[in-house]
Length: 107
Image (cartoon, rainbow, N blue to C red; front, side):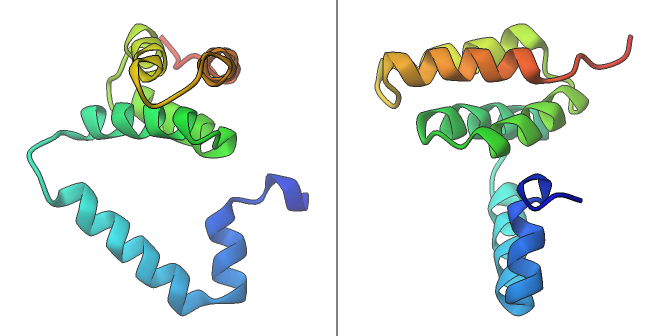
């Protein structure tokens, strides 16, 4: 696998496995800490990834959101709504472009 295609967690795990495992445990704990279902959590994360310019994370989590039952319209709204305070116009446009790259889930 090409270096640029490897997930950040794979790279971190190869360099500092204890740190990667601790990070994964923290993420898992945060995800389970409240009443939101997986679909809602993933939509929120997708918006956050757009606002912070994290394309690879957005693409990965948008796919997971679709698998969790989110619709493309919901993902689009999660991207667009970030313009209300968290993201700039160019970041939102970039997020909409990224969404075009997310494979459609099979019917």
